[in-house]
Image 1 (cartoon, rainbow, N blue to C red):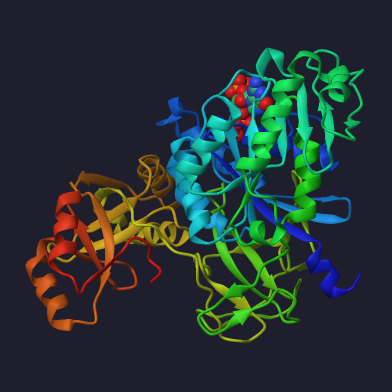
Image 2 (cartoon, rainbow, N blue to C red):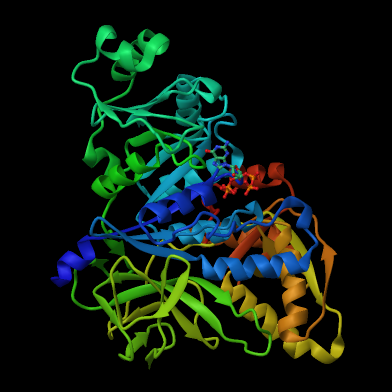
Amino acid sequence: MSFEKEIKRRRTFAIISHPDAGKTTLTEKLLLFGGAIHVAGAVKSNKIKKTATSDFMEIERQRGISVATSVMGFEYKGVKINILDTPGHQDFAEDTFRTLTAADSVIVVVDVAKGVEPQTEKLVSVCRMRDIPIIVFINKLDRDGKDPFELLDDIEDKLGITVRPLSWPIGMGKSLKGVYYIPDKQLNFYDSDDKQHKEEPVKVSKLDVEHLQKYIGSGTEALLDELELVNTVYPEFNLEDYRAAKISPVFFGSALHNFGVQELLDCFIDIAPTPRDVETVQRHIEPTEEKFTGFVFKIHANMDPNHRDRIAFVRICSGKFERNKNYLHVRNGKFMKFSNPTAFMAEKKSIIDEAYAGDIVGLHDTGNFIIGDTLTEGEKLKFVGIPNFAPELFRYIENADPMKSKQLGKGVDQLMDEGVAQLFVHQFNGRKIIGTVGALQFEVIEYRLKHEYNATCRYEPIQLHKACWIRSENKAQLDDFKKRKYQYMAKDKHDRDVFLSDTSYGLQMAQQNFKDIEFFFTSEF
Ligand code: G4P
């Protein structure tokens, strides 16, 4: 197969949802269709149950699972599909944000009864920032849920996207009869009890009552009215608009009962974008360029504390990656080669000789990589679009064992490189502050410092609302701001100015009173 064809047949995407909407179940069903697994239950749920907040073994188990399921590749109808896994627990939202930098599109799973939930809102807002094409799968149709039109309104309002249903439910819950798949004009029947004798789908030549009644019975008129409304209310589906993230097709189904999943997958491989162009500080990169480029979007520490190696996950942005070939690690200026690059097919890991733009490879790392690092064949490039997000939870971190301060320093540095949290140094008192997006991270850090670095930390409270980066062309105003807000100024690990606002009012006032200062809520500006 030609080099270009290899790249064009790749579809790399992430499934995102609020915990419990059905992400794991849908992933599993997609893998079953792809023949990548043969039994249900093979994909482990990658989530920490709420009750497990202080259960460190559970955190370790979660970390183990998330290595195994970080990427799941499989072949389907000649297409190479890479599903990027995202952590289920909301405290790991930042991991998910970063994973989205490696995805070309997403499928958002929404629970038919619960509608749009907070975590989905947050994640989709990140997709919108990056214009990532979105497909919506409304799940659990076998249960009673909200009215489909109401649900679509909720999705448009809360997620800020324009939707276009491509399938439409016929009933719901106990009265679910099936879905009408709009592009193929096809009725797909749902039979919850008798899976052996499932009725074959029926092509519908024309949408009229007599014709449909023999298949649907009593709900026919309601379906026809609804379909008419769908066509009047929602714009036509259009491929360019979807790929430009201007319109999101919607599917209805039940992942658990394997219903509506096949249409979703078949449509996905038809419409989902191939590996996208990527921006670097220096220039624009196209996936079909011959030379390899890629960036690290995720680092995973080894589970075994005796071997402090890690896996750096690299998204290939262009060209072909080859085993044992020399690549430039741009940040530290050194050439490196990798003898055991890993690819992930379904639940199996294997060493590969080559991989193409769109693919993810796992590289064994002994501490050389940090998130955002670039690998190339020699060109000095830096990818953009891999930001840190302004943290919202803060604690001072102190060394609790004076004999182990070196270990603590090293451990904290490495955990920050992995992107577990962000470190700031308070200018006022020189103390170190850990900032996170989720409370669980503090426990993860404490536990991992102990078990992987033999260091003990202690946290002390600090009352803060948000940390944001500041910048200004107006040096006098910036200096004045920093002088006045001396108690609230910090530096990040790249020595950039960070404003630690203690209240949302304080932040608002600062924005109002210092008009020439820009406040940034992601680290990339
Ligand atoms: P998540 O990864 O998004 O967190 O969700 P997951 O797939 O783990 O699904 C959450 C729960 O919802 C699971 O039940 C799962 O079986 C159920 N579920 C998923 N899809 C459907 C569906 O289409 N219909 C119905 N009725 N349920 C669905 P659980 O009881 O929490 O876990 P389990 O014991 O079944 O694994």
